[in-house]
Image 1: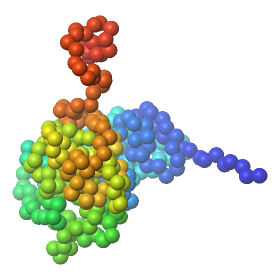
Image 2: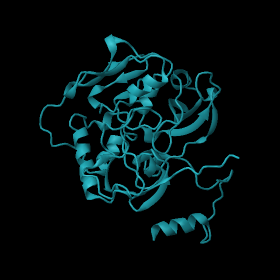
Image 3: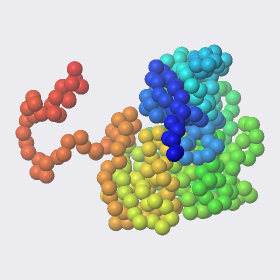
Image 4: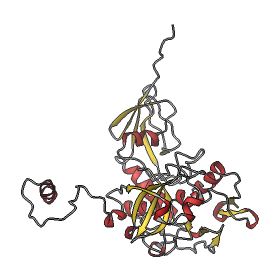
Length: 339
């Protein structure tokens, strides 16, 4: 008879929250399973092999290596690359050393990254912008001349502004793993490193537009959407279609009755759920092309929620002018917020 062998699980504690995970799980993945105090990630992407370990924003402190060897790790480690050990204890938001290190990493990222958020299409969706405000590092002490690049078009739909790039490699991994042929990558070394296409080639395969979605800053932008609207003035809607190339599950971004942008759907970590083709992204900009599923859920921390329309209570077809009573759920919730 075959016996069911129970799978071994290891215990890891992150900021006082304990969870049991499979061996080989990274600290960042374990933190995401807990759902609280999750380290930020600018280069790691769970759906891309080889990602992580480049931006250093997810640094954590391992105050206990394991049950067998309780000694702490001598230096801060990247949580996206460090696998858990049984009995490991990790400090994330509870460590002043980690907070100081992350603030320093953000400052390094801003050495060359221009603070042109008012004119950048990524504003409101930029992870670096969020990190800067979270750690109080909206500027850098760097006094030397920053490196600058000219904007270039790497295809009919995508514009590359290398001045904003933080070299997270996400776009390179995306093209390498989900497209037939990669024609761009990292050229040169050190402070001369840059993302570029090989010998002036254009990125024109069917899934090239996904590099826009995975870019954490405004280095790769949608030419069909540039300067049309701020994201907090738009209304994102979940929609789908029968597409022979991809899943056809997208987010439509409305301004009034016009679809001004189509993107892939993203999960709570800001990662694409399913990569979509260029036909869905760039060529289907009419409501009639899609089956509308409902409004996209937007986190309250996002600036997009300022103009959002996801209603908590069902609204009557014909509004009635009545005053709220003390037992009405809206009244109770508003009173709770005021107190």
